[in-house]
Image (cartoon, rainbow, N blue to C red):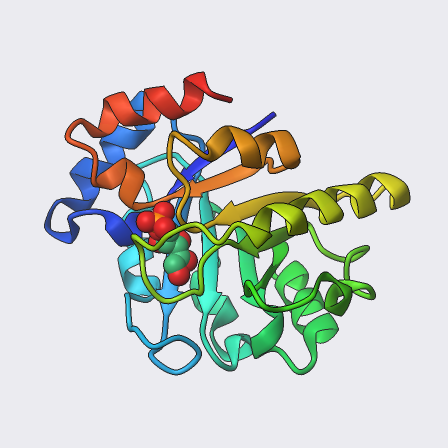
Length: 216
Ligand SMILES: O=C(CO)[C@@H](O)[C@H](O)COP(=O)(O)O
């Protein structure tokens, strides 16, 4: 099953509860939570307090994407009854295996994200431990950027590795996804689609979610 995870980074923060209700009503599956620290990426977004303010306001699960240095220090903050995944960056974790185990020990599924220029081979020894691999199709830090085409090849290669080795992780993509390119990434093997500006920047958010779902 392919799922849609709208990224609230592109939501109107003054209307966050309302916009979250809209995407839930329209059938979105997951809320993508982009956490940026101004160090690992050149932008600061929001932290666990904002995410937790949505607990109970929506029943959708949270997919937390930590674009931060030293994520181990903050993992506990993001654990709620609604947290399905916590994803850390390979590039931010010198002891990635330990960090993945730490996330799992909190009762949450563990994801690993890769920047566009990072090779898939850097994940060779973690694929069997991960519940989710996030392929970044923009350089992390900002919403509204253009899809980087090489991400598609990376998804295809990852899907092949998953099939060959019977791995359990799901494949997620994040960055520059819109109605024109979403089919190419799902055809390549993506199972969880993040979309920020193309959902929350649409004139009719509910309608846009429906348009995405029709393409799955
Ligand atoms: O992690 C990030 C950006 O670093 C993303 O989740 C963006 O928020 C996606 O936004 P769009 O590219 O879909 O506008």
